Image (cartoon, rainbow, N blue to C red; front, side, top):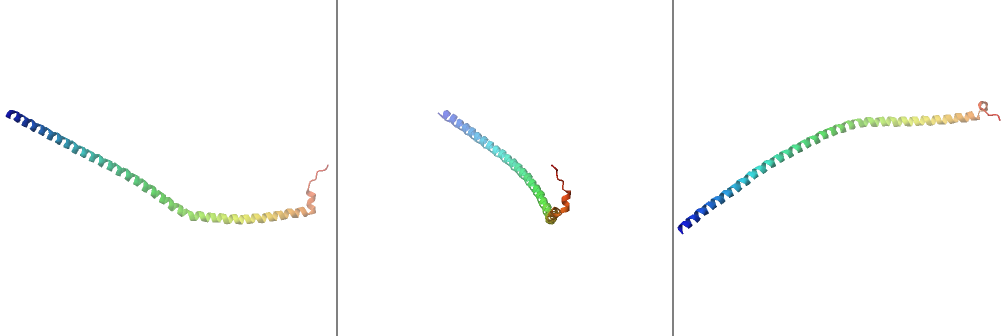
Amino acid sequence: MDQRKHKRMISNRESTKWSRMKKQKHSDDLTAQVNQLREENNQIVINILYVLTQFQMNVEAENLILRAQIAELSHRLPSLNEIINCVNSSNLNSAAAIHEKEEYVSYLELDDFLNPWNLLQVNHSVM
């Protein structure tokens, strides 16, 4: 009986030792996995920061271009408005001059029609 008890005790010790080793290996594996996941997480964060930084730089560059375009267009706007005003006033003056010419021409045509000497110039077909 003592020998059986002793054998069982030794078997229990080995089983406990094996169980502890298995538990330790599992713990080491989990620690390694945690470290690996942390490293992957750090790489992902670095990549995201890089992409976001590049995106921010692109947006800022585009923003600078747009601000420069706004400044240029704002600078050109008063000149263009001045040109439009000149063209409009010129068109009004031209329209008034054309209207005066039309009145004068219609007066001349009426005068020509009423002048009997101008009737001699008209060609009549003879039947």
